[in-house]
Image 1 (cartoon, one colour):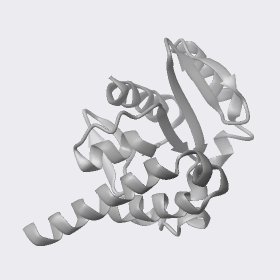
Image 2 (cartoon, helix red, strand yellow):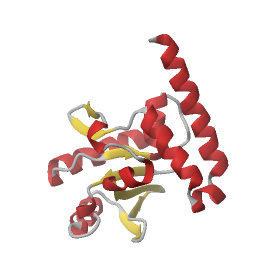
Image 3 (tube, helix red, strand yellow):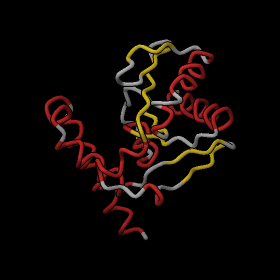
Image 4 (cartoon, helix red, strand yellow):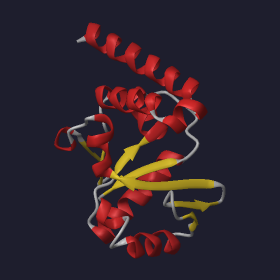
Length: 160
């Protein structure tokens, strides 16, 4: 359900705002691992300009689709118990050392979005495990995800 919702939102972003979003967080990792991680929400990275100067266009798009902004600081929307949060795609490089130009573009049913590979997810969760908030609140979850990612990387290394 969350994946289908992301695809729909990504399609709206593609068509209406010419944005190719990045599927982030546990939902994106689920897709890379092909494993259900019980993602709490949908994390979407978009160009920073849309979180600042063009924020109104994101709010309008989400409102038109039935979402309500509930946390301005986190750029988070809610509809029927489902949360969608936006953050800046540019933050990946300073936070986790990810080269944005190397992130693969996925084309699914005509909808385009970026999806980091497992090596990039490993960088993200390793950096997150050092982050103050996540270290105290989500440390065990991050450690489990790091182990899952490492195991999948080892597995694919031996099957290629």
